[in-house]
Image 1 (cartoon, rainbow, N blue to C red):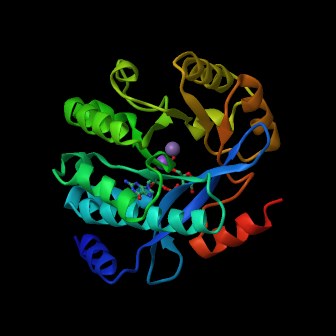
Image 2: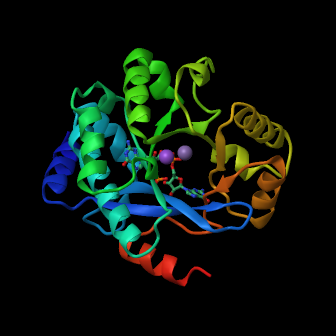
Length: 253
Ligand code: G
Ligand code: G
Ligand code: NA
Ligand code: MN
């Protein structure tokens, strides 16, 4: 409970940060976008992992307000990048289940896009398979409505959730993110077959695919050979604050 209280007051004092990890086209390694990732500075220095505090934010309901801020902040920074001339970049934002239950959610996404004057297709919503399984109808309806508005939709950590795969038919998806556990060992053993199957499935369904957690050049070339479109990982760049991202983009090739 102490941690939730601390999170609430730090969020109210605008201490949460949004960092960005670049995503590249596997064919020419040009930067196509970035994933927005929350960072919570710890009093002792360093950061508390979102893997720790996002579940607390979900449990406490704080994720509604934090998630709204993330959407607004990501679109605002995307607008700044577009004005700097990076006009084709997109930004991906992670969405939690409780956000779909918020009656304001659809309006809030639209407002973030409209008020920051970004093209809806340059905003991508990332959802996990667990979100899809939890409460399908509200998610299906919300995503259909947001897809009609023009935003794009990605399934995060694909292959790790409890999945019936029937949602691949029901949801208006644009992209599968191949979980980094498969990408990490893609040059050896079963992971390679799983990664290949996910990429093939994506291709056959007309979806884009992106490899997560690419750390080694061999992983990138293997995923490219499988027909994967894009990649994200430490090989290219770690998540970084916005100021660093602009410098990174300016110096990238
Ligand atoms: O950045 P890192 O890899 O430590 O993130 C760990 C987890 O936290 C990831 O699974 C990511 O999806 C989640 N996460 C990071 N930022 C956000 C966010 O803004 N909203 C939600 N719902 N989850 C996030
Ligand atoms: O769960 P999700 O896929 O949203 O989480 C993204 C997380 O993966 C981020 O917290 C980021 O720090 C982490 N990440 C990104 N690239 C790499 C990588 O190349 N290797 C590892 N181990 N983690 C990564
Ligand atoms: Na994600
Ligand atoms: Mn992921």
